[in-house]
Image (cartoon, rainbow, N blue to C red; front, side, top):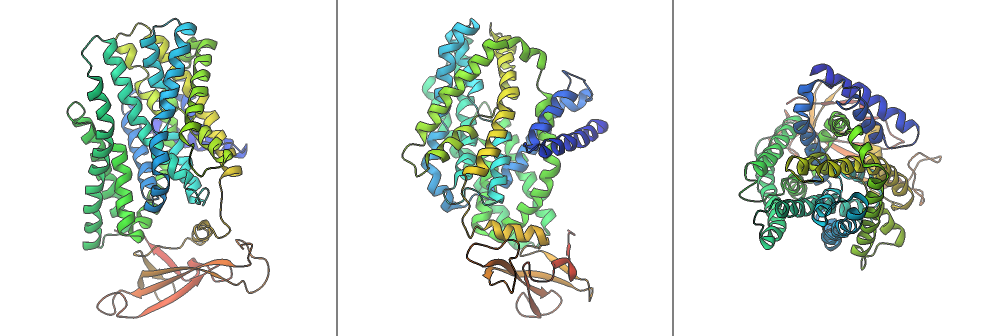
Amino acid sequence: MAISIALIILLGLAGDYFFKQMKLPGLVGMLLVGVVIGPYFLNLMAPEMMTVSGDFRRIALIVILLRAGFELHRDTLNRVGRAALTMSAIPAMFEITGVMLVAPRLLGMTYLEAGILGAILGAVSPAVVVPLMIDFMDRGRGQKKGIPTLLLGASSIDDVFVIVIFTVFLGMYGGGEVNLWMKVTEIPISIILGIVVGLIPGYFLYHLFLKYDWRPPKRTIVVMGVAICLTWLEQALEHKVPIASLLGVMAIGFIILEKSEAIAHIISQKLKKLWVFAEFLLFVLVGAQVNIQVAWKAGLAGIAVIAAGLVFRSVGTYISLLGTDLSAKEKLFCVVAYIPKATVQAAIGAVPLAAGVASGEVILAVAVLSILITAPIGAIGIMIMGEKILDRGERSLYRFKELREQMGLPRVGERVRSKEFDTVWKVIEEKETWIEPSSGPGRGKSTDGLIPAISLRYWKEDMGNGPGTGKTMFYRYSQMDMPFDHHWEILYDW
């Protein structure tokens, strides 16, 4: 299995690089690498790797959903709350309806089988959408109206809704008794319980981090462990209580961010570095689930069904955004962002076949084909349209994030070492401000002539009874000042 992980990293990195060189999303290259080295093409991956593939993909998805939670500000959620709820159900309902109208004629299946297919196709892929939205948020795009946050929340709830509908249709096909109203009530129950089971441990972790001054890596590992336990809890209680654990994962980050922005930012930075590896695992392993031979069987009829479903879905997405303050172009961006399919289709595409559904093989073929078509097209569309449509204010917070990344600055709570005196200090205060450039048109300069600067206050830990009582000093960092690593280095100990 070790050589399989090496292949995922090296070939995934190559795919990411070549596609970015072509100005295309790197994740498309990773998906295609997975298809090529997977068991259905060159079969270069060890069987045991494919056995644990689901667990690896889930862990990688947890990493990016935690990052999403650490970026969810309450004021932004308040602005997009209603639209997120409508987008979590209406587009999927439209797509299921569209598939049920065309699939019986084109694929020769019953309306109930078409409903099962529509429910599988109706789920947007958080594995594709969430990383791209996080990237936009990191770069300050769409901040004014909270569009990336809207799509983060809606895409997560969308999966909960669609999987419940899929379960209802599959139960009806099997001839068993299906209490429709009970199944429908599972949707809000799973959403509420998912959020609650995330908020409670998140609140506990916040107090734990306040009481024990753990270093950032240890905090990040603890958060990851708790998040993984939440997804296990969902599986353990699957047939008793519905829990949308992925929403709970995001809620952990949300509550810590609400209580302590400094702690949240530190953990988010560590998760960002962890995502560098997790990204390869997620997209390469999703691609490895794709069976090209099966997809080929769907043929042109399968493509037509997928296209019809997307048309209906696009109409539903646009309707769900009526009454919001989004412009026509921004609504169009949301329509495109709701195209990618991968995670749910790879996870449940083969379930109808295993359950004995007559058209199970056709359903699987169309599900696989939908990944091959919509994941690359959707990702490319999101990247291109997002750059052109999403706003970025003249004084966007991204200016500070850009400065922080360029200089490799620490966060409040992190420890640093003075290179000159070999002493350890702790960052206890941070200020972001706009300053006048001394001369010349500096990089990162805003249109009103100001440039971003970050001031950090350092406290010498072995002096005084607490932060602010001993020796402290301020350093300012901007494009005009000395770089951080000229005087300091960050200590990444435990």
